[in-house]
Image: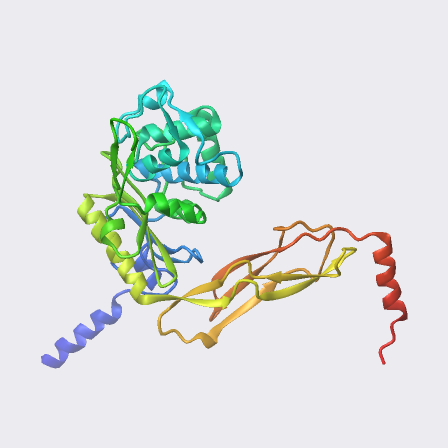
Length: 396
């Protein structure tokens, strides 16, 4: 009887379907590792990436289109930093507050119509206090009207390949047809972090506006992780009754910067706790492995009819891949995808090819390779001398 019972039980187990790991994990788990994680349990959507390589470490329904609330301001800050970088805007520029900017509700720095404030102070107001009025003031300064600025936001989203995003305003106040995803927010956060100066604003816990006025305004960062989590220095919180509690956070330790995004959390305590746990996991389990140092020559391309006959492709920065700690590195390989030759003229920054890093057939990272300097078209005398030397040079 006992033997029959065991045999029947074994038959039942063998008859059960075996689901592949990917099907079990669905949209959750450690990226490409086969490991199923339980992170950000209470978030409606989440993603965790390495900022340097863009590698996704963990994701949960990361492409679901959701209201982003004030995380919208990441794109507002990105366009502001890009305008500064391009010379169209200065931190010292004065911005005059319009009626519309001063009428914004929700989180604000209480701008009054006609009040002047520098771009520098407005960025503090956006990054730390999540000022809806400060966001509109910057938008109007850059594009003339908020409506025109929103067009720029959507154009930039398209350029970044954000397929889950559409903006209808610059501050995230509830409005129809305004949405994003954890994945897209991580991408725009990564882009914003290319401007190192931004963490001066997003990473400060407290500051003041109108310091020399009779009414100084105390700023306290809505992102408490910048004070309580080691290495945290941004980026942006968000909340509306529809979006619930949201956070795009970044932290840096031992040269590795992470970006975590959670949307739809039930409260601030849970939000901060779950983002901290995401960071703890990644910092304890992963490390960056340098492949090339900044300035190292990666490859060479022949230049046709150029002032120089050859273009060296060098690493514009340290190129690294994200690997699990303890991973054997002998299985990491690289492929250089560049043309044999390219015709002059060549502009500085021109895309030439890419470097692809793989491990056991899986792509770990891809790096664009660009021209470190311009190469002008050669004059006839240079070309004549080059041809003559090739014709008459005899190898002894």
